[in-house]
Image 1: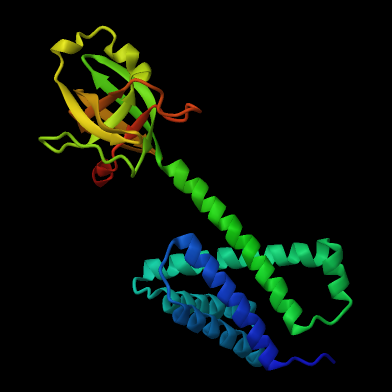
Image 2: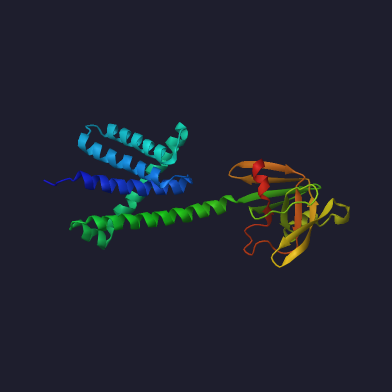
Length: 274
């Protein structure tokens, strides 16, 4: 009959829960101190030992108590108070745990190293190294996923309207764009002139409400860019739509993006309106 050591059970679950809490923290973008993360993981380790000792007769009861334990762990680790935030964090915790469990399962049953481990007793330090490697793989994957989602969410569908004409473009929300008009301090969105030629080709620019806007860039401390106030600009993303009236558009001579991913650089101040 196999012997179960309660201290080993606690250590393994403590380490696993700590890894999953770190993944959850990264995925949710939450702030959490190491002390709180360790406390949350300790709660998970204690619950694993309790579940084994109680040997609960019903699977649904064990599942319910395990979810309540996950709620308590995330609430402790991330200082959550609202029930919606706690439920969301617990759900994300289970999602990360499932991903980690799937990775461990693939390694254990689908690789030569895993099959070799099945026929041998794994020392504690090897288990710790294995779990750490699994964490690093998942952590790196989550970082790449979040970076992809962040870049994707910065791109908007933009439609410009002026004098009865319109043009549809892709816009990048760039936090590095700090360009404002010098007097009224209005945010300036930078547009490639080539991308809006159809919108402006029939206009006499001398009759438009033009503004000369000073700017600084690499290698040019006292540059000037021509600004045009158009009728309106509509931004769309993920089913949401917002229209800005009388935006200031700075016309750039060259291309803004070498791969054509976007044609207009949006000012970050516009985020407060979205």
